[in-house]
Image 1 (cartoon, helix red, strand yellow):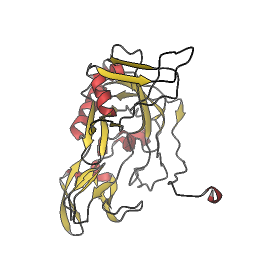
Image 2 (image 1 turned 90 degrees about the horizontal axis):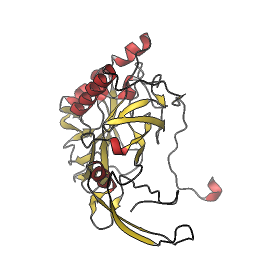
Image 3 (image 1 turned 180 degrees about the vertical axis):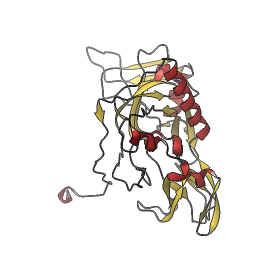
Image 4 (image 1 turned 90 degrees about the vertical axis):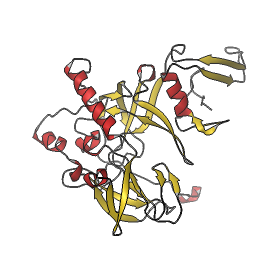
Length: 310
C-alpha cells in the first residue's frame, strides 16, 4: 500500500512496505526499482468522492514517463559508522544485518570505511543541508540531518565515532536515477529494503580537512554487538577496525569469526571515481551548504510511558 493524506493525487510509498499479496517477496523498494527500469506498475486507488474529485475508484497502469514527478526522499542514509553484528546463541537469526549464524558463526558490518563520506568529514565541516551529492546515479541534495542523527557518540582523537553517529536525509529525482545504483532486496525473514549508491564530494579547504580525508580503514573503529540478545542494550564484544573487518575475519572471545559486508566497497570505489570524473568534466558542481548539520542533538529512545509520566 501507498499513503495519501497529502495533496490530492499525491502519494508516498515506503521502500520497506510489504506487498499485500506477496509479502516480503515484493515491496515498496521493488515498485521504486520497477519504475526506474521503465516497467509498468499497476495503480489502484479509492476515495470518498467530492465535488472537486467525484471519482471514487481508479485502476490503471503507470510508468516513470507517465507520472509528472517522482521524488526519492530517504530520511536516513549514509550513516556515520555502524555496529558489527554477531550471534552468540545456538540458533540462526535473521536481521537487517543479514543472516547471523549460531555460536559466533559469522559477523556482518555495513560501511565503506575509509570511503564513507561522513567518516572523511567527521565534524560536518563541508557536508551540510543543501550539499549537492551523487544519489542513485543522478544528482541529489542533503535535505536535512537524518533520523537517529546522534553526533554526540564517543569519538576517537581523529574525529571518527566508534559507532552509529551522524546520518543524512537525502532527496533526488527518481526519474533520473539508474538501476545500477539503486537495488531493491529482501532480507530473509526480516523484510524489504533498498540499496542506494551515494557519493559526496568533500572540498579540501584547509590543513584540518587534509588530515580528515587521509583516514584509513585501520584508523576507524566500531563496536561488536550480540544481536541474539533481544533488548535495546545489547552485550558488546569489544571494538574492531575496518582493516580487520575487511580482512575477512576477526577474533571474538578468542575465536576467529568470518566477516561479511552488507555494503559494497567495490561499488563505493566506483561511485567515488565516477563522481571525480563528473567534477573534472564540469558535469557536477560543488555547492556550499546553506546550513550546517548539528553537532549537538538530543538522542532519545522510545520508552513506554503513561500520559502522567511525561
